[in-house]
Image (tube, rainbow, N blue to C red):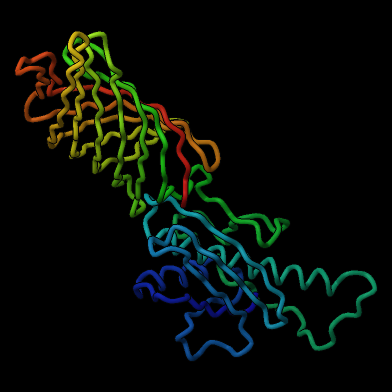
Amino acid sequence: MPAVVVDIAPPEPPRALTAALVDACSASVETGRCFGDDRADAPASAARATVTWETAARLRAIVRVTLPSSRTRKRTLDFAPADEEAERFRAVGLTIATLASELVQAEETESASPGTAPDATRPPPSTESAPPRAEHPTGAPGPARVGHPDRDAAEPTRLHPEKEPPRRLWATAFGVVGSALSDGTGRYGGGIDVALRPSEGPWFVSASGDVTFRGRDSAGIAAQWKTVVARVGAVIPVGKLALEPTFGVGFENLDADVRDPGTGRRDSGDAENLAFHLGMAAEYSFGPLALVLGLDGSRLPRRTDIFLKDREVLSAPPTSVAGAFGIRVFLE
């Protein structure tokens, strides 16, 4: 196998990680060796390997190896967040050695096929014994092979196929049914929630707004709630589902309208309060969409009383519970 010069696209990683990559590459080839792109002693006829990390977290690497003859092969490697960085770079080094070996074997097979004249300029095979085969960094004898020589060069090598990149941005439209006033009646309505997961970790932030109604009863009382909530939560995978516990702080406006059935007298008023929210949602995703079921509990500083003719007729308890069902769209 020819020498290979490895070029890592910016941003440049720490020297220790680059050294781990080059050492793993050199240890995994039967002949030849690998060099960093800063090595002046690398032969001019060396093959070139380029490594591009697609994300700052270095969870996906695109590896491309090109021989002096311009023959090229590429492979993509995906890693899990739990993988150590040094092991990721060693895996990339092993992949470079594998791709270079596959390219050389392909050229030798092509030149030795029937009807192809032997290359008179090719030097005779060396009679010297090959150097001892190096040990794989994990202890298994080299050379190591990542992937399969017959696989399409552009096909990704999935080291952790169960680990998909996390969804970063989503919006959910939902319907709400919950408790309302002290007479045990309920309310219903709908809203929209938008969430952002800023990193590879489980944490996300969201903002939601909803409007719910309690229809007019025989006593002439109707109510409407308008709520906005800012939340922080976490995504916890559980099999095919994802659980999302959340904590939030919201602003709630209760607008009550009272009409006396006997006199026709009408009065209305509203009250505004801060509210604390605890919630739990379960998500089942399919492609760019997901079904979401949620439960949310809220707590106000005090109850809200509703009066007619200076007489309390109903109240909104300080604690309420609501259930939600929604459709989620993943935007990124």
